Length: 174
Image 1 (cartoon, one colour):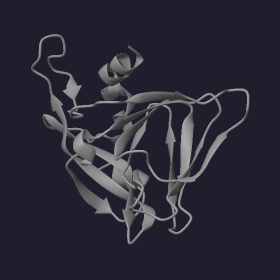
Image 2 (spheres, rainbow, N blue to C red; image 1 turned 180 degrees about the vertical axis):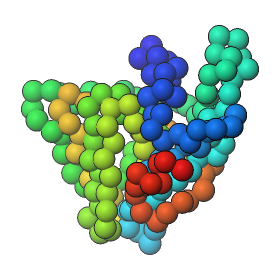
Image 3 (cartoon, rainbow, N blue to C red; image 1 turned 90 degrees about the vertical axis):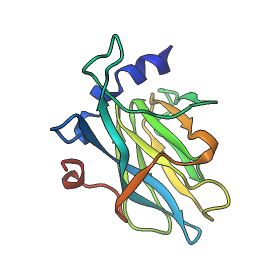
Image 4 (tube, rainbow, N blue to C red; image 1 turned 45 degrees about the vertical axis):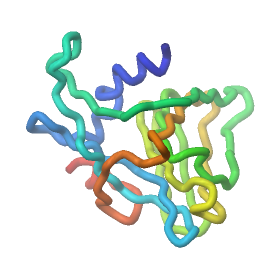
């Protein structure tokens, strides 16, 4: 039920990454990728972006198709032990990661940069085992709740790479 309510309100939660205008709105997100066995960030524009719904109950609302989701999990970080340092690791799956509460700071041991995602935000992770030697590090705030939702067949959503680095505010405002 929590996943269902989150996905219904998804458009409002990440409004900071939408461009305004026509019937379709751009969705710009940070993605963890692996190149030459090294995890790093890229800035992606998802395709298609939000589209206006014509489905009863959501007519006129912005809708982003997430694809078939199977085996999604909700993870709850204890709120009494301080931040959760997941250590260096690869993504469990190529997946969506939705921060419901709290937030996360993602860094890379072999690549510059990193990014922070606050409650209501999302990022994508595709540096699964076998694609990156050391992976990435995620430090979640105490009390964070997040969802990991694998992509169908392990294939990331259609996208265009906007930058070979994490997204900046100027990227998110496009």
